[in-house]
Image 1 (cartoon, each protein chain N blue to C red):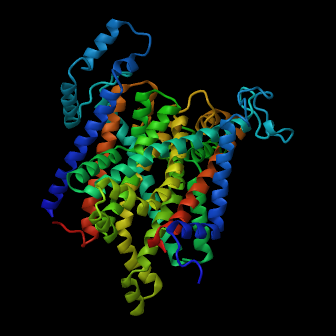
Image 2: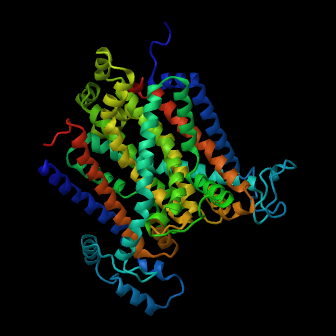
Image 3: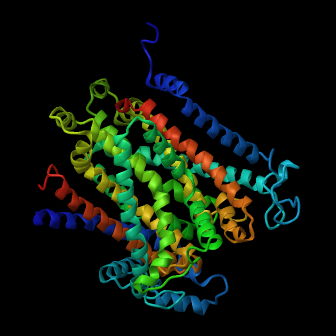
Length: 286
Length: 311
């Protein structure tokens, strides 16, 4: 009878470790993370805009730069895919860093205080979610001007609604539980009850939400960049797919294939990891 | 019942007001003076002044806001900056092509996805179920753009089965133009839908009434197709609302790829032309459509689920 006292996190970690698919997904995501980090500190795939061969050279195994061929300017498509990975991962990370605090804050105060605060927050996020995401994203990037920072902000301020909904629901459930009442009788303030007592007990929902949010941020970045509203002058996957529109009829498939496959694996990994995390962390799902 | 519907309709007013407020704040306050984005860099002071007067940007903000609210109520959004057409006329012209593409796609997807989900729920835990789930997850991980590009390249350009792009307003001719975008939309959304409906149906399978039905000797298929399907209508209707943003995104991308002159194409063109009034009108309109869609499902719930209280 070992492991009688196991925390939710320890238990979840054990479950994830036993789950081969989840481990595979974690490995894929970590790999993407490392690649983006190395590209960010300019150790690999730099400079990406150097001419490495003739225009539209087909993929060949002769060197790493040419493994995915070249684009219209003779630049290495493989390097562009890596730079695209860096941009996609940074969009996922930064937009999550913006949206999670907003979602947790609004969800927590709405669920905890109830009353008019709850009404106001719910009205606000119902309204916000009534404006379809793509329209909101287009408006924000239109207003802020095109570029990577507009994408960070646009995705950050639109993606918090689903997290706020979940957190609000959990706070409503938790606020009258014994441990919170006990904390109150010991003199814990509202702030202390929200952040020290209840939040640690609902924080696993943030992790479950994170992988889904990361994934949809990556997908949205690709679509916005494709529409010409996103990254300017840098090789995003969306821009590469947009280029491929005109290249396909000339038989140039490698730019589309590179961007699509790079995106496929990370989205697949996040998708399946999200499921595994839900199974491991949400006690209701067992 | 009627009272309930009226109450639901009234309850959408704060949301629509909120949408108007957010859109107004975004476009007219945060964005600074919209005239600069509309005219671009090469404009003299007089042009800017004229434009500002024409669109009422020189008036106080609260008058601009009340003017905008009036636009929403009267469905008169003024004129487009790029094409000088009345915006409501542009919307009316665009709504037909958009609906003729998205509505059939959506119905076919839902029917296909629900029947596939019922089938895999029937074989739950067996190989066919697992294969279907794996295919769905793989399918939903591929970018929609890749499906569209590949579909257009392979089926329209290479094989020549469909026209590459274009549109015809008359009925039988327009079908050849919307067929390929329809097929692509169905394939794109099938993965997500099948997985969603499968989960919804499997949740129902563990309910008590299913055990009762089994205990009284009903066959598994009768349980699934009669009892479970009826009770799964609630998550199915819910998903219809969840899908609306995907429908809009699909309309955007498919219309602009296949040259269908619908609402999506109008918006994309407006974005490329910095056509401020059109982007604002489209954002408002799509949000209101979404609110109406939500309202419709709320009312639909009362028909399929007697537990929904009308009080």
